[in-house]
Length: 282
Image 1 (cartoon, rainbow, N blue to C red):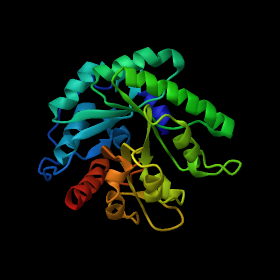
Image 2 (cartoon, one colour):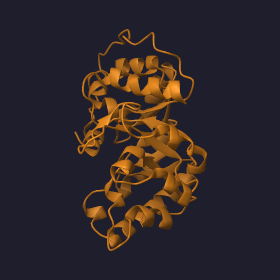
Image 3 (cartoon, one colour):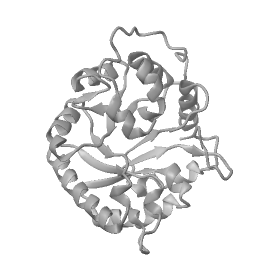
Image 4 (cartoon, one colour):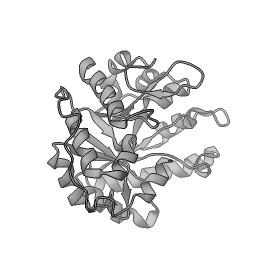
């Protein structure tokens, strides 16, 4: 399921009647860091059992969460304050949220995210229409500057999450560079998805050096060797995260979130492997 489809179709009644099961991962190692998890990684599990999924995520050791389930003023079918309370009941914090919305929804979106205790609002993708030309990107950039200023006025920070297409040149211009150079640094940050950057043949550290301080959030996922460049658990692939994390301060990174769009096997065991690697290594 595509991210936007998931955001738009989360059922408002999914948690009705659910019990909180004992986690099979209760004996996991305590976290040494505030390692975050993008909940899109476990979208199917969350759809089946939101409270039970949060319990298991907490027991793994994750502390920060990034949502991918906002719709019509609610998070995963719950009122913002109620969802915030549920997350905090498991010793975690809703730090960030992936969200798309129309112009007339902005007031509702901002209010809901403030009530949920979110600090970062992140635009997660662009449609084909929004990225078909440099002029299309310029329209997006103007929109982001406006949204970013409104977020700033409401105590929120606004950013954009990349995939690989932003690094494909259009008329000799790399759209990602255009976005970095044309968005207001005071209002718009970048959430760099390190997998997609490497997938596109980009050296993230080179971007940190060229645009220091612009990358407040990171998405951390790994890549298998081979032509398919399949996603895999962090620490089991070819991305040199030890080297990349040496430039965390240069990049301006404040928080990072483990994410895996495609998981083969048990979802909780998968995100646990990534957590254990990050917790043991950094």
